[in-house]
Length: 211
Image 1 (cartoon, rainbow, N blue to C red):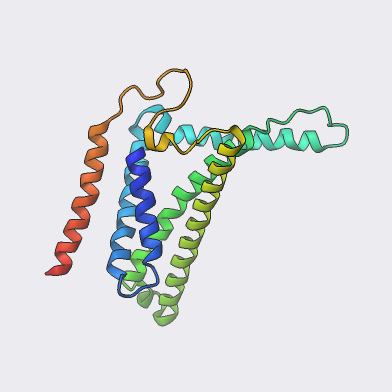
Image 2 (spheres, helix red, strand yellow; image 1 turned 45 degrees about the vertical axis):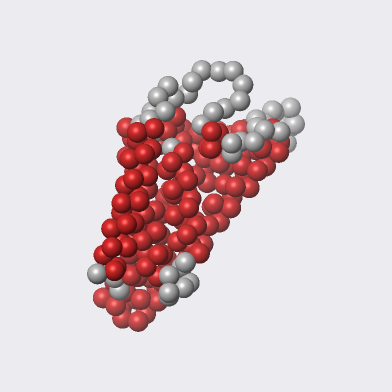
């Protein structure tokens, strides 16, 4: 998960930075395809990986939003001043929602990017179709960037609130304090395979472009 996280983050940032430059168009396209491939890996790993990495675990957090909003509504209703609200749960819910939304928006982002690169718009409606695809691609790109900003803001806010660096575990793989191992096997081999797969794909694209 740490390898996926950093490869995904670096690929997205690189693709976003190179989006407006015709000179770096190939870099943008290759990194966009890399993001799509990493998304496919994340979905697959979210289905068959360990429980903390499962998409179902993240979805359970998101599905609790309705119940939490009901407690908030009850607390704000007339005569509901005694109703307690689990405020500590709010950033956890927002974090899960932002991550699910980010993963969801990557699919239309990469599809519109692929369509723009292969000029699907011309088949859909000539110049108008091309502009529509490009505008949709830019919209989804900006939406993804906004969700990344929300994710980072929540991470920084929770770290300040708890007086603990919550980003550190994504580097070290360890949480402070006592407790059971959430994941018994570190799966270094899978992380190495994922890294080698991304590097091999980029090398193949570079080689193909030089022919």
